[in-house]
Image (cartoon, rainbow, N blue to C red; front, side, top):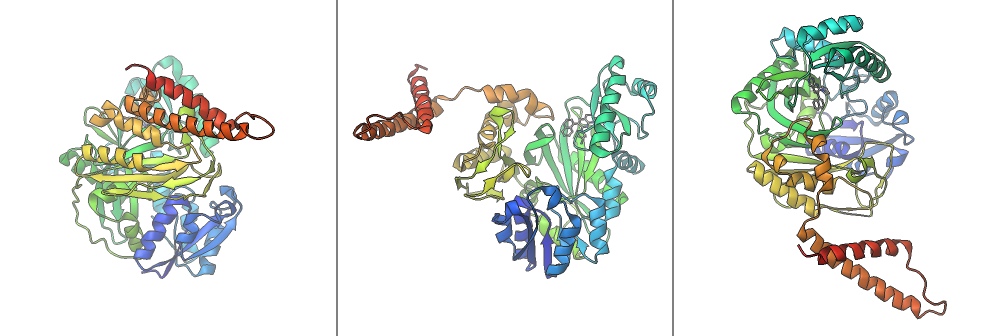
Length: 510
Ligand code: MV4
């Protein structure tokens, strides 16, 4: 085992890796930008190295500076977390060439999965189902028209270098295809510097189901089952769970076997995830492989009892997987991503200081967070503040437990997704597990427009009365002063309007 590793990341995932390292008796080195000098991940590690100013491009994305920090601190390996340098082929190669171990797959495996068309070809060659379509880039609009006619509308134009939905266009009629091809090319060129576009049949209303894999460097690959990630908005997942209501033990085995074949074909080692579309008819299609630990890995940990990050480090150190081939999920796990975004304002990022933070705890409750009271939330990094993960014996228990845990959570100072999550948990379709990749966006108006309940109005009325009373006392105080009555301060004026409105609401007959 390593004596010391460097964590090339920040926030909750840096803390997650530091915890795994400590449990293994491995020392950890954090890196930080000027914005993160006082961040929790810096204190969670045994040592910390400053790598640059706040901007990611001048700190967390500087591979050479990070490798240099690893060498100087005597670390033997680098854990990249997710995002930042985690899926950069050149970084994995540079780490290896510096005589260090990259805690992740080889540069070659990252490259093999980086091209979506190459990954598709690899899947096809190993009998893994992919969506009907091509793997050759389109030449021009004429080629696109002929190819689309072959598969039938609707079709989806996708960037070969793609991922994350960039350079993707749905085409429903022949008349739209030339314009869509131009638009997809432009977007792909800007995003990836590569404007190659190919065609797939468009699958309507599928679920996004992914398979978690672990592979050691001795050629053993195992599946840890699926995660259901359909609750997403603009390719940002909001809630994930394991298992999926749509996956039977037989389907789990078939999807797991398919994912294992893809990983073997790529010579894959370490933790990885194969993404699939699961169509309404039960057909599944391989989309792409993510060559990193993912944000939502804890739901798999809670239903399998396997510590994925600990295994990442053990695998990188050359250990053999000592887990069974088949790991049936036990119970149900669910994760809500707590972000500093304001759902009532188009999910606009919210900034400021976290004034207070009260964390949920109790049975089946896990908090993977990267912030604390006093943390400044800016615009330099991803808005993910923390993940709230729960376990229950059944899906219903997990939903009830998540609701309870979200009610315990208090974050003051920045807007967060907390209340939005509470609303999703009350949705009858969500409660039934009746979700697919377009569900959240279709449901947004009803989720955001929902009227407060009687109980919520009652709480608001009680709070309003307390605020009004405090204002009355404050006014009595200023009235006694020599200057005469001053208007209440702006904050109090705002509170007073709110107080009046909520009192009126609460007094309205039901
Ligand atoms: C699709 C699809 C429907 N049909 N391919 C989105 C990003 C990339 N990973 C692939 N994506 C999709 N590919 C076919 N042939 C729908 C999506 C898609 C999607 C997939 C997974 C999770 C969320 C999504 C949201 C919108 C579209």
